Image (tube, rainbow, N blue to C red; front, side, top):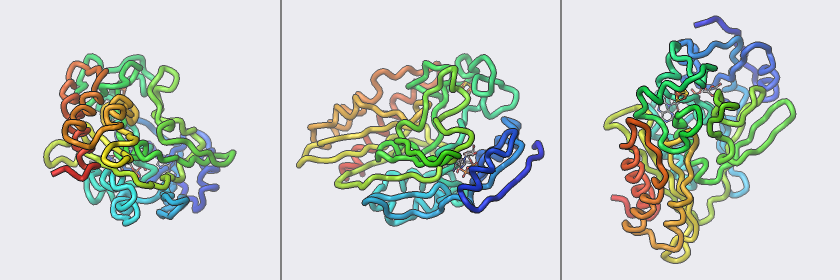
Amino acid sequence: MKAFAYVSPTTAKDAIAALKAGGIVRPLAGGQDLLARLKDYVETADTLVNVKQALDATVTPAGGGLKIGAAVTLDALSTNPHVIRMYPALAEAAAKVGSPQIRHQGTVGGNLNQRPRCWYFRQEEFVCFKKGGNRCFSVDGENQHHAIFGNDGPSKIVHSSSLAVPAVAYGARFVVAGPNGEREIPAAEYFTLPTMQNVKKENVLGDDELLTHVILPAPGHIRSGHYEVRFKESRDWPMAFATVVVTMNGANVASARVVLGAVAPTPWRSEAAERALVGKPLTQATAEAAAAAAVEGAKPMSQNAYKIQITKTAVVRAILEAAGKRA
Ligand SMILES: Cc1cc2nc3c(=O)[nH]c(=O)nc-3n(C[C@H](O)[C@H](O)[C@H](O)COP(=O)(O)OP(=O)(O)OC[C@H]3O[C@@H](n4cnc5c(N)ncnc54)[C@H](O)[C@@H]3O)c2cc1C
Ligand code: SF4
């Protein structure tokens, strides 16, 4: 690994100032993604700014919802009684990440900002679009874990954050702080589809900014469900997953949000699936109709058409969980 300077500020203000140290400066949280990238020479850095002491590591009530600090660990998130009660899909997504060690070390900020797991991206030798090159190796190469939606752009990654999907489904807002103060961004607008102009990034965060909080709105009378399809006994990232959030009007769905994970470069909202739910009771038949709608328009690559079926399975099971009917 190339040598780098290390600073460990104790306030968010000092951490943001430290991002201006000059050269390539990166915020360091749990380090599980960033340090692996540096060790593998996927990238280099001149300075790392430890943000674990500088950023909030608490979950606090806010406006009937919750305000979650970026330094909260995945373990603390998944075991927090308020998160479990109010936003169970978020707690479940955090609880399913990797292993206990990874959840104790990994943070909310690091998870939401982790870089792609595309195996070409992760190997020094493959200088693809994301690393300033002029091709995507997955097109003619190994693409079984790549996108089936939103893959018209230069990069075909799937977003690697499990938390991003329930965050979008629950209508979270991300608080971002920079030299000019704070701004709030709806989670759905934080993550970006790749274009030639922005292909080296996965979100709208500036190099001089930090994600400081995730704000979850008051849940009201929502019901939610979350289902991840994974390799059996695997600690790896899910192959496809879904978070479903609904409100009910009597026995029928009044409003729905269906967000898919591991299928696109961003959390992928399916309005077709949402339309298939609204006005209907939460039955197996409705869930299957919504799942069929969710995969309409999928454009699998040469090796990932299998994701269509497992995405449907994830949607059906997430809906049935929201209905309290999953076995
Ligand atoms: C075997 C294994 C399995 C895993 N499985 C899953 C999984 O199923 N689902 C899943 O979601 N994740 C999974 N992960 C990733 C895990 O969730 C890590 O916690 C996460 O990738 C990085 O968190 P971290 O705090 O260690 O971040 P770091 O490595 O410190 O940072 C990650 C990136 O975010 C940036 N960053 C960190 N904090 C901030 C901030 N506050 N503002 C702006 N930028 C910031 C860093 O500069 C870096 O680029 C897995 C990891 C491993 C090793
Ligand atoms: S999918 Fe993206 S990260 Fe992977 S090789 Fe193609 S451009 Fe690079």
